[in-house]
Length: 128
Image (tube, rainbow, N blue to C red; front, top):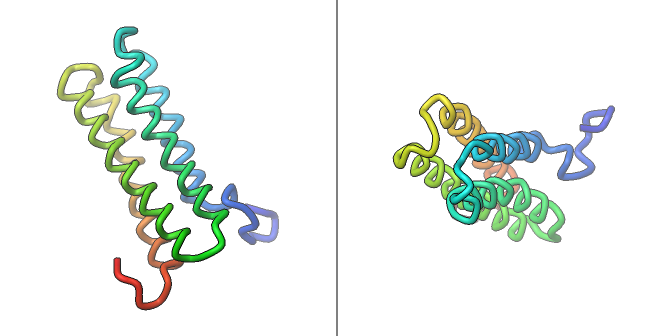
């Protein structure tokens, strides 16, 4: 955030910063995956993880609250996709519970922040 606390860019948003940390954690999680997963689970987790902050940033640049809200909802969808891939990686033995727990906890935090941001920018009278 800027020195005076004003939000001048998507980079000043706490949710974007948390989502960037989540995306980085996805790279860390998948670093130890087998090489044969490079175009499978590794790619899926990294793509979904990177999509969360990317959608937040893209939405921030839109002209209307409605468009911004839609991109934030896209970020939520990517977040749920990410959680599913991480849980599947655990289920099939690509990752341990100890490795996925911090990623899932961070994803939960980002999800709560996204829901709050959507409520704050959603046009009055729009449905959730």
